[in-house]
Length: 449
View 1 (tube, rainbow, N blue to C red):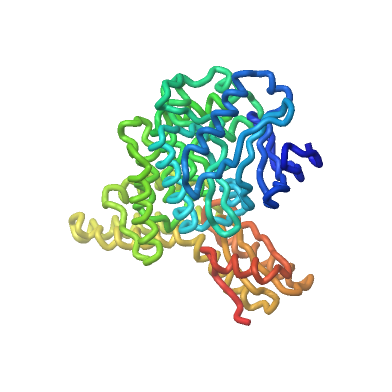
View 2 (view 1 turned 90 degrees about the vertical axis):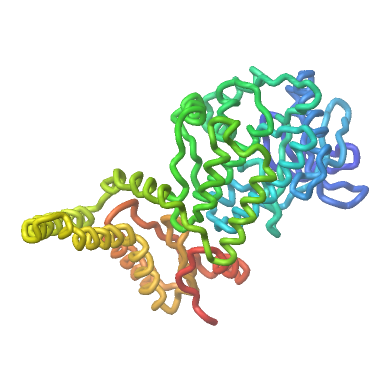
């Protein structure tokens, strides 16, 4: 298709392929603007059901007027080739941003608000998207999200069949990992169980995307598509605040309510989600996050205790054994001397301080690494994203890398628990990229010019 013309569109490049067609970048020679062309593959052109779904996609997307939904210009045929001409979005998908660790929590909340608003307008128009996932949300270079691909949309007000298309379900459960996990991992429980769906199915899938933006992980994964669908239908998710520290308790509550297995217990409209996300954004901008309820905090501590021993280093085991034995002996001595349990209160307080020291060791080691690395004049920026320490350097020498690797080894040797830190060194990057990194969460050092 590259180099050919469909009506007044000159095809320039292939952007991607999927089960419902290939998408090309093209130029509208009449209006001199870039567009995206979605073309039905030749082998599917004679399939009337695929053609009908292809037309339905254009109708569904064009029925909603919202800045966060890609605009449809026209649907047409050139010879026997049907295509949809739509707005060209120059940017990255949410999945790409998450994989590159370019979404801080405030940006994720902002993207979530705009996507939820767009889907709310679609629901008001009687349209359920049914394929909300991070690959179907593009974010432009200036930060505006766009919802793509209404190819599986259901027009709920025109008597469409509620049941999932058996051919679609068969496609989703194929064993190719790229195809399977791209869609199945974002299903709602009712989709996974082959039950009728409504707008609340989109709310569950949106909750998965929100979870992914907040943590960098998907809440439901299995060895196969069927394992993943079983997890979606029956397994509980790991709380986002146990994966990424510093997340607001209010965001945890939103994610939990979006991911309720029972659709009756979920948010009933996305407008309610938008209202709650606005409160989260206000908390993040003001720096005053609401505390989690006491019972929730107790539950989270209880969930973390069994995992303390997971991935504990030799140093960590020594610290646990030393303090555990010391506190036990001191407790026995105090109880026997005081003749009662009140003598244990000081030990409980000391035990709490030891627990905080153990939990805070990772952050302390990271800050110590940043402080030492900042003393190297070649280092311009030190930031961290997850388990990766990112450094920006100017004209580094061989000894710079030797020193940084030594600091990294020292930081990892001092860990009590968890996976070792990884280090990524970026050399002589452009000022715009440096400024972008400096504006993201996790910055520990930025050299003044």
